[in-house]
Length: 452
Image (cartoon, rainbow, N blue to C red):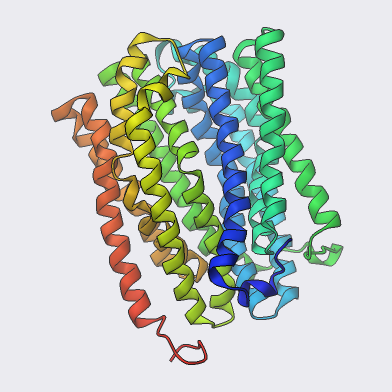
């Protein structure tokens, strides 16, 4: 049964979090399986070099489409707090501005991508033999990016409304479409990596059509023509929080550039393939933790907007406890089954030899990442953009990028892998300190739940 926006402020936190997290987790799982299976298919049916090409291209397309995610998350925070305070008209106006911002910005970046494609691919690490398959994969996927951006934006608005099951379905549909078309285009029609790209393009379109159907027929956010006007105040409010998510993705893209070049320098093309497998596992294996983080955002945002600070604090503590338990379980599975996991992706002996230990090191600090993820998400849900931005950039920007640049000069390729747990530990400590201070000073428990 769907959760209405009002129930975000009244239902039991544990039940509400589970009710929100399960669809979010399932949606992320299918999205992750989609990318994972894509990687397995191109690895097994095209070759390990194709994995390297996909590893180069996806950070570019995700950077552009993350405009939609950023506007969705940032606007979703504004929208949740507007619903929490009873201002539904503002929530609808926010949504209309999200739609216009996402379409305009993603389209501009796609045109830039088309004109400067080779320069972009070289920048993101399409070195040596990686360039040709990267080009073949890049163009069809790039055309579908505005659809993906609108899907990402819409998905966050759907969750902000308290309807996570529809958000889940919007992520399941493109996964099924992509997997089925991958089999058809790559295996049976022998279209190679271009077939994988066409399958991805069509899957993005299918997702967009479902999201469009939801907002036309099921959403509380009923848009009318007069809503489609740019509101400077709302745009500033959305942008201040959207900048947090987009900055994170921007830093992730910078990290991808540095990683791909560093890996190529110290380990060659096969090391880029190794990270291609690891990056897919980072998205796939952590899906329940990310699902809880996504479920946390609308609950915390709504109750913060309603000034029900007791429920905000309870949501933080419950989310960290559940996400922490799941992260420990994931780490144990990676620790013991790393070799079996890697064998699914490729038959390349060099890749199989290097990847299992690299995978274990990259996941080594995953048991503590719940504090990092929930802590940064809280400040975004509460509309505290500067702190959210700082904490969001801490892992990749302040620690991981410098460590990836420095450690390989002393430790070689191992320096890349060990940089991940070190960055996780340092960023978790900082986020934990910020969150503890916030809870002690600004989320003080009172009889009626209001702030002192």
